[in-house]
Image 1 (tube, rainbow, N blue to C red):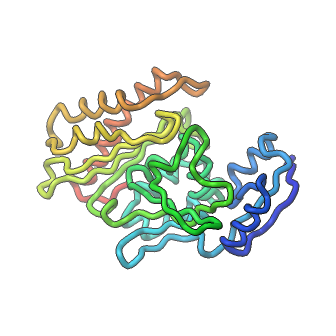
Image 2: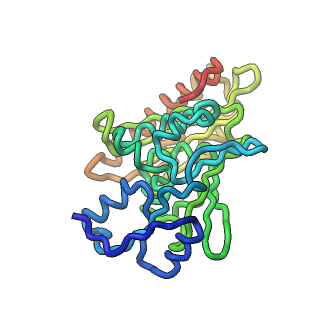
Image 3: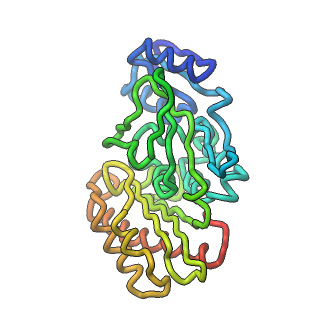
Length: 297
């Protein structure tokens, strides 16, 4: 059963902030696919809920005049996957969130909830890391922006304050234009599965499509929080895509930068092997798309 003390439907962001300020134990809910499970399990039993579901400013995807893509945090995974702006410019993110759960979950679960729950296995996180996404947080004192790479502070923890609402996920033009990406999720089955490991890559090639101009390599479940392999990215820059040493450098570089742990899902050693394999496979797919000028996914 669901032990909920109170439920409040916020009329807008400021209304939600006001209620959160007044109740230090209240929990924000939108789609509820994570929060309701925690309530049922007793982890949040007796809590009060502040719903931001249905607030117009928090839903949808738009492109601003400077080319920045703005994703409302209450936008469902299904909406993101099929949104025209996402499909045209950052389809790898659409593909990543399409790996979450099953159709029922993707129709109610939101990208903001996936980010704010702070778990390293969030399918959207690694892709957003490789897109250098910036998170807009709104609270009593106003708006602040935090790069997603600085948002996670530990397992299940973020820098979002209790009375702050995630109000936008922003990706600037220079972080997607010319890039092609791919996301690979490994789990014990193909659907309804939490990632044993997730790997995201975005790559930009030189004008002649022979060398790597910029590589971005991100992982979920390879560390206590989602992670970027910055050193590996640096060593791959400028390399010829046909160089036999490229993928070996990526494989071993990635393995040296991650810090996976053992759990009932997989051992540390197995996750390290997945890092080596998925870093190469995902990079290969991204490069194929970049070299062929295909839409990424």
